[in-house]
Length: 636
Image (cartoon, rainbow, N blue to C red; front, top):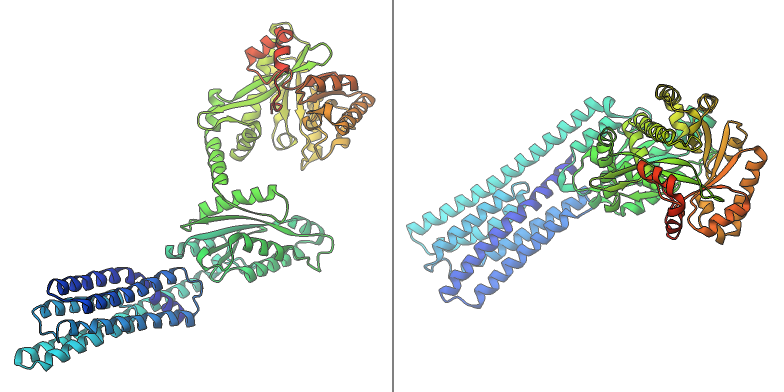
């Protein structure tokens, strides 16, 4: 508590310097001006320079205090003593005012005494947290003034000297009383904090690690002073912790969490706030000015400490990823949101990485939030819809199908990519609505194809295993096809190779769709987690070779070997093979020579609005030559 009171005294004294020093400098400048106008010379100038230098030193000390990292009682006490010494030096300098006024006998003496009294009162007013500083300043100048006035003799001078001494006594008493009241106020503040902390300890502490929980973190942040900013928030998430619980059980997992908490504490800057806000998520919050390490270096040290192998965990390695956000004001919601955004950017870089929330991530977060806010409106108004990219036979250039691809031109951020749209829908709970929108767009396209007599052309929509696992997408599709009298054979569902949690549930739903006559396509073949296992599923009717293997195929012997092997597998298993990302005629010719007969890519066409896609079906031969001359990334 005493250390806290000393810090409060020092902080208050430092703040008061920025008010009292400019006033003192102005008053001393006023005396200099009067001296010069009345014929004073070098002595007055030297006196003013001495006052200004001492005032400057006190300001420099105050500025240094704001950035000081050492707040130990000894260090704080030393800085307070330095303030006292500088105040004494300033008092000595003001004592020489008696010499400038010939012992306060000149006509300007009353003015000087008034200025001296005002300066003394100001020092007590703005330095009442630390009495020695005020007393050291006022004592010598006022005693000197009283002595010279008394030496002049006469009743009036005796009375004036007595008044000066009374004033000095009052200033000393005010300084001591001010310091006492300041320290009492500071003491009561710390006692109240300790009492409140004791009362709330059971409600804001994590019982396992004894760190703060989320509520405790909120309370701690609310008590932080803005003068300690800027603040750094680190969101620390363990990598591989689930494997510890799965392999060794929750008892060992709990023990690991306690060890991690202690390792974070060992590396935390002095005065930092540490909390556990989730199963394996920790928050480290500290004042940047109090940390002896840069945020990035500190994060690396914490990651290394956490990743240090634990003898009890022979077969599992635990690491950590850290998101870092720095803010001038400690606002929990904002800090956790932005630190979390940086955390996931770090995780995209791999295990044991850290990432600082910078201007680039800030723009990305603003974009993400704006997209999530506007997504429902875009779906409901039709601003978000599907365009259709043709699937073309490589030998005849005939259009044999279309893939429905999401398109949304945002009024602020322009074109929004399909992955961003899907992610936003998942975050906002709109994924089922988005899937239904895509399905209805596909139904509309199939209806137009039927009207044009093109029942041989299929329309494909993308669906992830997670969508199948989480909702009743299969019911929505089957019911929608029946209600709208849409031929199931004209619909394809391209399933990306994600790893679902409940594979049996997904397989059951895929089976229902396949049994209804819908063609199931394995998308992005060669880049997923279960490629060869998926090929054993007899419900798979087509596989799409990923564009990463197809782009610049003519220039890569290795990619040609991979593509040829995939085509051979498809032929052996009776599965149709097509390629996406066809961008040059040379790639098209290589694919044909390897036995792949269907392609998709910018060589033929980008995704088109429905009317243009239908027109492209009629006029594909006329459009093919100019389109294949321009290259670009395959539409997503």
